Picture 1 (cartoon, helix red, strand yellow):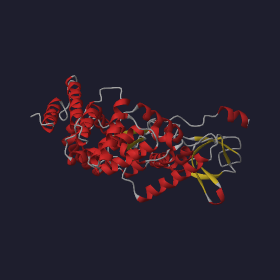
Picture 2 (cartoon, one colour; picture 1 turned 30 degrees about the vertical axis):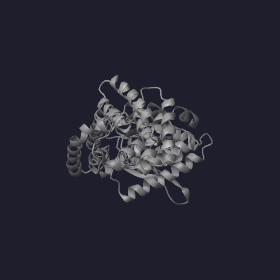
Picture 3 (tube, one colour; picture 1 turned 45 degrees about the vertical axis):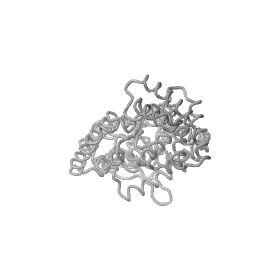
Length: 443
């Protein structure tokens, strides 16, 4: 009889957009009021008391009560880590209070507005390889659908911002900046950070923190501030490959990054977590990571392979630090890339620019020239910015005639490129040609 029930039982009732909740099934092992041995029992939650004893929450008539596991057996105990966390912490609350649909709808609306604005203004970081890697991490973290009012899954949204920040929406979307990604050094470190955010989602911390007055006031404040600087986005994040100069003021640059993860939107999303919530999430993260490392079928990526996976975010952040005039910090990022032997042509270009910026000795200028020549050999597109950089380095080295030839090539390259942004364009190339002529005393 029991084996037949075990074979037929459905582990998790389907999610419904109602006052009800998902339940698990158990079988009564003894007489429990109206239940006879062998009866199927709906289980709405559980808790562990001292000495590891487990108690299941069931409904007995109009009342709820906890029954010891020696009286009820969970029919399928193959629950993953986060299902157990939800079952223990949230199941009973949802059973008593429902899904609080209106408040969750408010949180969803905030997410849709946020995601739309980030996409429209070019702040969503797109790299298919990195996105695919993060999807693999999600399947390690939480492979099943989240237990929510509306079916949803854990997801990661990468935002192009230099500030290292992370927060989470109620629907399971974790917002992480490229600035934070680039600071991580191992898969274990990133999974630990993401698992803490997963805990916030599973424990419904955003819903608990939502206050309508705060949401209305701060959400309006956020979008008003963001609108004033959105026009600078395209200029800040233009592709460096096409020689864009970044003449946007530091204040605008800083404001743009800050607006993408401002206190207003964090408060609006209910993601300004209390110290107690952070500590609870940290504890769960530690427990998850310990369980993960005990799995025989799992091992972390080697650090070099991990860095290859996130190298696009690392390089982008280094470029942003450079354009914020944080040259030493940008060089530290480049040191990591070069030490691992994973530098791309853009990395060689940036390291050359940093070397020229941070020093002016014959040795440093010769090293910058070597780096830029390597970038030019590696490139598979019109890498005009590298030509401009090479010309400047050659002037430093006193090779003015050779520099002039490079600027001629640069001028020809940019003249064939439509819609090149202001900065180092054909006009700038003409000025550099005049400068070279003056240095060679031809004018």
